[in-house]
Amino acid sequence: MKFIFVFLTLLSALIALEVEVLSWKISNGQTALLEFPKTEGLEYKSVKVGKKSFTIFSKPNDNTKKYVLIPFSYYEKAENKTLKIHYKKDNKEQVESLLLKVINGKYAKEEIHVSSAKVNPRSKELKKRISQEYNEAMKIYSTVTPKSYISKPFIQPLYSKITSSFGKARVYNGTHKGYHSGTDFRARMGTPIIAANDARVALVKKRFYSGGTVLLNHGEGIYTCYFHMSAFEVKEGQMVRQGDVLGLSGQSGRVTGPHLHFSARINAVQVDPLQLISLLNKNLLTGN
Image (cartoon, rainbow, N blue to C red; front, side, top):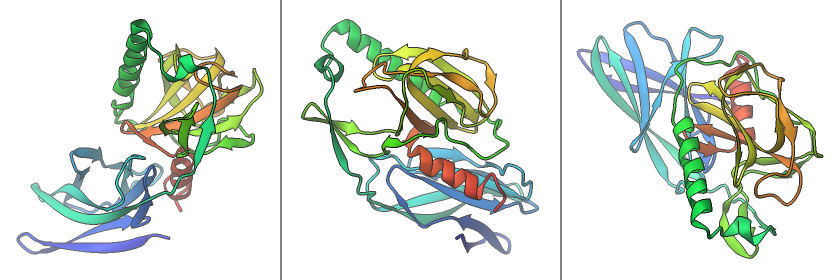
């Protein structure tokens, strides 16, 4: 359910700034959604959280509203966050603030046993490769394409049992190594993996940790990621439609067996992919 709050500011007269917030509480690792009705003489620019700025875009299939997605990292502290809304009113720069509360998602832990070479690689060559692959991916994730390629609700890239959910603390061979950054789907070797929505292919590559990797740019800072694949059916720069086959499932990279790791990023911030898809489908892509 959405709650509408009105914030007032004094310019030459009393002006109301209206914003719809889906929820005033959000777990770490999840995404918040704000909507703004288009108002004559008022131009929404961005929302800033700390040093990060998020662009306000036109809502898909609804030219009467604007929207912004605010991703909160898994490592975000449980506390109140100040969101500063930047906008222009009659060509004058203005800022209004609101508070969202980030709460602890209370994610579980899981133990995983893999080759020690995949846990603590020691060679300089491997460390250099890992660093280059990380920097390459972050450069892609940080690129916000102003155009949206999305015109319909998202689908899952694979319909099978979920074997590991987002946010679980990962303990590799007895050593804590961060958290599970996506959702794992059970998949036999060679299972077709499909695009969750329309997009431009941003990366097709065999990487050290994620193995056979495809990254899709859906526009407006939204990316979905498909890991551990055994074969590719797409090329970088190619436009794909929802349901197109990206490649085949596999067990490449740091894995214990064949599966699909599906993840998502908003403005380079890693978020729960299924929560994001549900958020977009229910509140942004269906007009509800």
